[in-house]
Length: 377
Image (tube, rainbow, N blue to C red; front, side):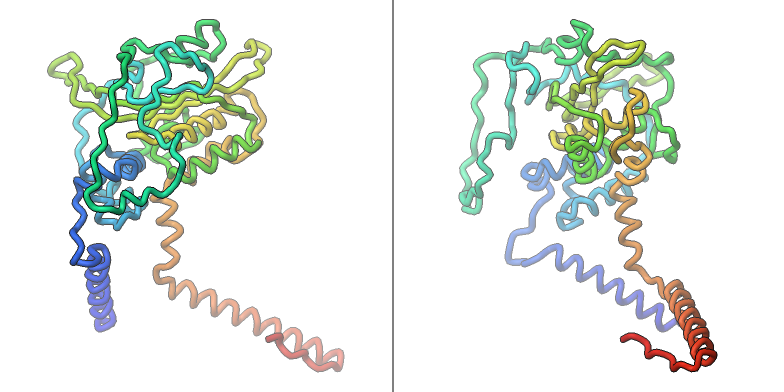
C-alpha cells in the first residue's frame, strides 16, 4: 500500500508539471501577460468576476491565465481565493440611476428622453472574421466623442416613464431598510427563497445555464412575454459607512450592466392590468447574462403573480439548485475519480443476481424437462 501511495504522489506531481508545460505552450512564443488578458479579454474577465463573486480584474486575469482559458476553472479559483478574504464592511445600496453611462438602450421607446446611447457593442457587427487582427502591429483605434453631452439626469424607462401613468407594478418597499440581505456565500439556500436570494443566485449563476432558461421562457415554457425596457452599462460608485465616521464614503467605482424587462400582467381581483418587471444586474459588460437573468427573475415570480407553473424557469428550486457551475462541475466531474470499492460492490451484486436468475431458470427447465437457453452474447 505504501508503494502505491508513493507512486500515486509522484504521478500527481508529474501531472502538475505537465499541466504547467501545456499551459505555457511553445516557449518560442512570448508569454501572455495578465495585463494583456485584463485589457484585451475584458469580457472573459468580467464573467469570471461575476460568477466568482469577486470584483478584481487583476485576479480574474490571473485566474484565466492559470486555468488555460477554462472560465469555469478560473471561476473556481476566484471563489476559492475569495473564501480567504476578510469581510470588513457592507456597502450601501448602489445607485444605478446615477450610473456614469457608457451604453444605454431601450427596445420599448424609440425617442427616449436622454437618448439611445449605443456604446461598445457587437450588435451591429457583421460577424465576419477580421484577419487583420492576426497581423503584427495592429493600429490602435480611438472612438470619436459624441457631439451632445450625456444627460446626467437620464430618466429611467420603467420608473420615470411607465410609472408616470401607473402602468408598471410598484416594487414593495422593505419595512425595515436595515434588515439583513440574504447571503448565499455564507448560508445554505433555504426554500422558499426570497427575491433577494434568487437574484443573487442568478447573478453568479452559470451564464450558459441562465441563458438557456431565459430562452426557454421565450419559447413558451413560462407565462411570460418580455420587452427590454432598458439596458444600462457603465460605472457606479460603491460606498461604505464606517461606524466610527457615521457617514458614507466612496471607496471606488465598479462596472455594471443592468437590465429591466417589461412583462404584461393581466391583473387580478385586486389589481388593474399592468406591466411587471424582471431585473438583472451583473459585473462588467455582459448584456446576454443581464437579459437572461431578468427573464428568469420574472419567470420565478409566478407564484407571487398567481400564475400557473408551466416551465422549469418558473421553478425557483430547480433553477437555484442547478445554476451554480462550480457545484455542477464538482458533482459531474467527481465520477471520474476512483470509485473502485463502490464499483466492486455493484459488480458483486450483479454477479449474484445473475447467478440467482440462472439457478432459477435451471430449476425451472429441470422441472419442465427443457434445456436451459444459452446466455445472449
